[in-house]
Length: 75
Image 1 (spheres, rainbow, N blue to C red):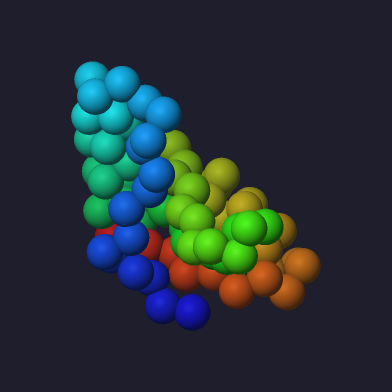
Image 2: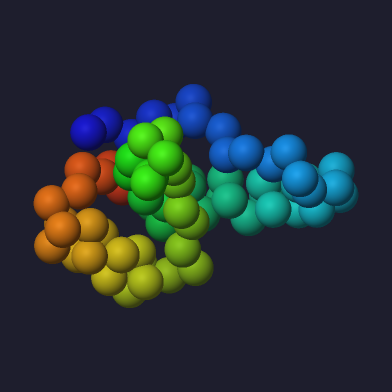
């Protein structure tokens, strides 16, 4: 699986101010290599953002343990 930098998370239920704030954090973390994309339970591409490498690595280890495809952002 390759990381899709064009993927945009769903912000439909957020106020514009909250969406703007969350996007700043989300995309900064993506640039820092702290985001992971995977296919969620719905079958759609999902992306989670982590506040440090340890949490990202623990999540990646769980995905790998269960044989789930993933792609981590690169810094």
